[in-house]
Amino acid sequence: MGPVVFLEPWGFSFSVNAATRGYKPVSAMSEPKPTGGYQRVLLKLSGEALMGEDKYGINPAVLTGIAQEVLNLQKAGVQVALVIGGGNIFRGVQGATRGMDRASADYMGMLATCINSLAMQDAIEQLGGSTRVLSAIKMEQIAEPYIRRRAVRHLEKDRVVIFAAGTGNPYFTTDTAASLRAMEINADVILKATKVDGVYEADPRKVPTARRYRSLTYMDVLQKNLNVMDSTAISLCMDNKLPIVVFDMTERGNIERAVLRPGEIGTVVGLDETKLA
Image 1 (cartoon, one colour):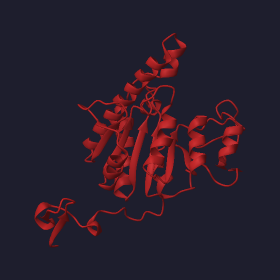
Image 2 (cartoon, rainbow, N blue to C red):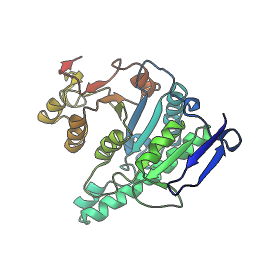
Image 3 (cartoon, rainbow, N blue to C red):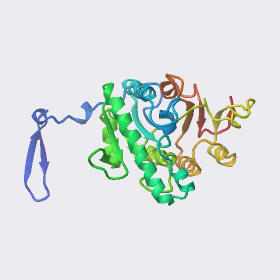
Image 4 (tube, helix red, strand yellow):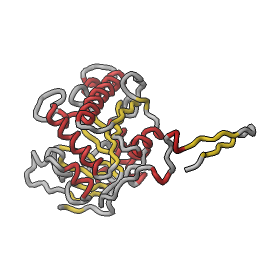
């Protein structure tokens, strides 16, 4: 490739030799490989998911297992972003119910998500992956500030992007942050990882006869008050036609199945009709 000439508005020009300066033509940029499933996904994990069987904090084995599945997805050509809650360390709503100022409690919860994000970053990089943590709250020593274009560029460069600190505002959950970030990066789907294998008519732990939904409309989730994501998050997804897949992450390999074989497991929210499994 020959020199690239740049014309400046004040009349001067300069050239850059792409071959010697490391620039790549657009056609040489890496592209996601076909997978038969989604190409760009946002994985929403609760903080409690990182605890495993522990009562508090982060279980190293669980963390490593999730990190490995994320890397397996990336190797299959999928661009992966994550949003992780902070409930394994501190939940803002719980702090508020104990007499704390709600805004202060929520900011503490945001810091808990940063701890989880850094832990996930370390686990992925220990396995040989490349990651970036982008925080909605400025903390330059440990994370990049959240900039939408920067996040998309990291994904295009095959880096796992971890969004920390929620939306950066109190009174908004990490579910809402996941919906917002997914739309900003043009994700194909939100993967809502839970400890049950989908959305049920009632809590299957309390009602053993409750049946699982195979698919749900957004309106049915809101009207039936089903515990998928909070109503703000569901409304955002509905307005922008962004599907949500709710699935059981405790079974090894399910994160990959949810992405590479859509519709095989879990409940899909956002289809045209509600169906029971």
